[in-house]
Image (cartoon, one colour):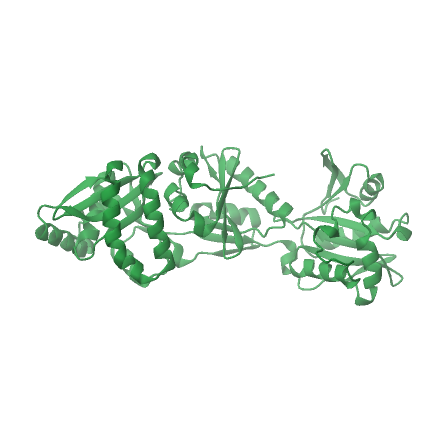
Length: 474
């Protein structure tokens, strides 16, 4: 199983091989982005094979980035996607993806079919420019930027641009303190967060391999910029200029482009975060592309189910547990010894100091359905509750797991086998599931025999469980 760890700023160099070789045009896949926004996005990572997996927590939801293979191995990336699905299924985490590049969108559509929600928020798209366009601001469309540069050169004929070295940290910090007096006045959370991170990343620029530069006029710094080479682009993480020095912004952008010409075909100047002024400015530089960042949410078979069904077999009825059966259901659910093979102990979640009331267990089952964690049905014989049958662990590839438990007096009559068959048929025909799975503890030989009798086939084992599955063809 995947084990995610918190990204630590003091170990960022670990990620450099993946980001330096990345083939997307998305700036989020970079050392600078992960360093500067780690706190705001609560970023975790795991490594599977040669793939880097990133997990982000934002606004209460968990998102996964596209797996980055260090060697560009697509089959390794697909195996990593399998592991992400398994991680979410085992942990009851709703699967969401973020920052998916356009060229990988087909992978997900082929993987999940039409059962996937796709969004592409305009405010988070990166602005990608051709480096050569910034080197001269040639042609009519760049007349405005070119005029600003000429004005800067005229006003400050002794200007100079020098590449950043670690010895420049003190004077860049002094420049930033002057710059931020106006920046902080915006009272914008993201702007303040970014300024804090700019100060923090400065001492690490050399080890991260950043390319930075200082624009000077009148003998002092008036602009500072820095970026990171990722694939065929330079991701520009920092660009600050004193606005009283007219033309400083287009001038420092031009000088950085010239510094990386031949090493980076593109400049990624990140998103505009929905700021109207920033959007206007970025568009005026005529991006070659607004880089799509797709969010995807695959849908599972249970997600479209608004109410629990009622199923009938030759002897049984499978239906939602009625309020009047709370006592019988509590006897089934609260029996710790009998439920050791169920794989769940209710005491793990119950926080009360006194024994739970009978309706506690019904309420839990109904909550599980509302949250689409499982589809629980009572097993009824001649109107009497004798057990429970569930479809749970709904996967993202048209798969689901089945389980049944009975009251002791109902065992030994084939009712569990009958309930499993009914649930499997419902899953195949009504939920369009392609694979029904089950497992049982190895010592639970009765359950093993029941699953085989219900038509499931052995498909594996480990130290704890036997595993079974069936398809519509079985």
